[in-house]
Each structure stands twice: as C-alpha cells, then as structure tokens.
Image (cartoon, rainbow, N blue to C red):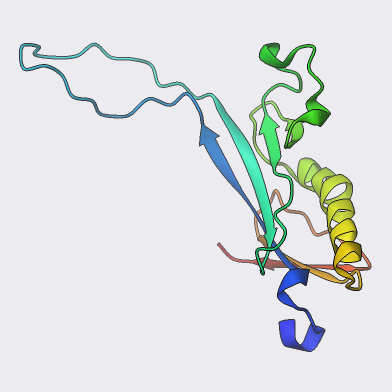
Length: 151
C-alpha cells in the first residue's frame, strides 16, 4: 500500500492515545520493621488522555492532544489554554470519543500536516494509521487516507 500509493516516510503518520493517571500511588510500599501493617488509602482515579502523533521519518511530531475532565480546570483559570504546547479538549471521563477524535482530525491534524507538507515541498497526500477502536470513526478527506489496524 505504501509503495503503490507512492508515500514516503514524511507522508506517513501514526496516531495513538495513552492514559496518564497523574495522581496514582504505587500499589505496594515498604514499611518499617517495627510496624505490623500500614494504613490503607483510596486509589486516585484522576487521569487524562494524551493523543500523540508523528510521521514515520520522525521529522514531524504534532502538537499532542490532551483530554482532561474539565475544559478549564481551577488551576488554569484565567490562563489562555491556546498558548499551551498541547491541544486542550475535555470529556467527562477524560476519554477519547468519536466526536473528539473527529474534531482533532479536522481542526488540528489536517491544518498542521498541510502546513508541514507545504514546508517540505510535498503534495498534500498523507497516510494516517490508527487503531481500529470505536473512538476512531471512519473519516474521509480528499488528501488523507486513514488506515485502521487491529490492536
């Protein structure tokens, strides 16, 4: 497919998400010999999702997508989220959804890749590889071929 389509590594992108439990404590810990047991704690479930995307040559790493539970968290009140080095989106559970993926594709991926292709002097013809999961809907674009593969 890559050879038949005439794609070069600069035109092949891969996107994938990962969850980050940023307050999670270790499941085990060491205690002093003098203590028989250690008091328990409730596991924090504060998480966020990151969508990372890069091309096969490693020449272009796109701005990550960060999905948080709140669109404007208290700690970021009064701050301009557009100045952050991430695309900021929100979902009640901080998970990727088909709507968020579509929005990222149209508003983040396409413009960034178009600009990169123009800078490199390539035709705007791109291959995007993503996992075949329900949160990745079928997307159509005249210059971008989206390929789904099994996890």
